[in-house]
Length: 379
Image (tube, rainbow, N blue to C red; front, side, top):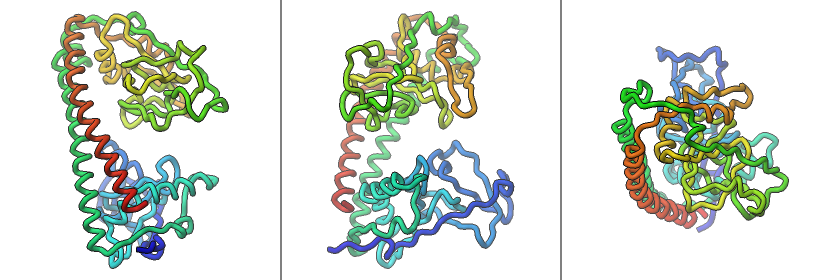
């Protein structure tokens, strides 16, 4: 089976960008929802905005496929919402007599397409692509009946992946529920726990100012704000340092709490995570804090630092680069319930973590399987 040119079987239509003065948060006759990338990537956290329908408004249906054109979201494949879409996205419109929308969707998600887009972004002065940049991309495009069979296989894997992710989310909700059950609503401190500054019960270590020019291709991984997310570290995006000698102070330990100090707040929460011991050794970079409990339970402390109380305490300063200081962290007043209660909660966390580990291993296997299938179908 020979390859076909993507642009021969698919059109790409850029979005429109009404002036911000014409946007409104009120839904009304003659207006349509204006979609931005964050509407897709942050569902439920973005307030809908609307613009007046005109003959230049570019619209999409719920099952249409959009591609993020530039910036940090370059190449993201977006679908599931209807409305008008802005210039940060382009709509992929397939010739459905030749290629189905679902088959096109999976191709656009594949490494074959994504690597092409990222290579274009690297070459451009401002990361991005246009229709001409896609003109050399080719793919295998079998008969529609075969496309349908391939999509059904990939959809089944997606169902299992999403089920595993939902199980992990539900376990996180269970932990939060158990925390409130045991320690009460901390905003009102209904159980009248005593409070003391965190500095009396935990050690705060700020990372070392590693120089980017001295990074190596392999070695000891570096953890910092650049690869810290809410609740996890993107280990695949780590930079490397050649040795540990002389930097022992900045070596992370299993269950250490790490927090971004620059641009710490994202998507309604802090970029804060607990280190998985299986990923060590790793070093901490500057403008990132490691918080290590001394005489309280680390799991209890982690939940406190993810609470509204800590968010309200932190004085995030700066407009260009919002940041918090180690003094902000040190001065956070933590509730001190009986240590036996903290230990009970920590034991509960360990049992939940065992369940999460089993689910995560299954999820990793499913994602490996999907990657293999995508390579087989689209590589």
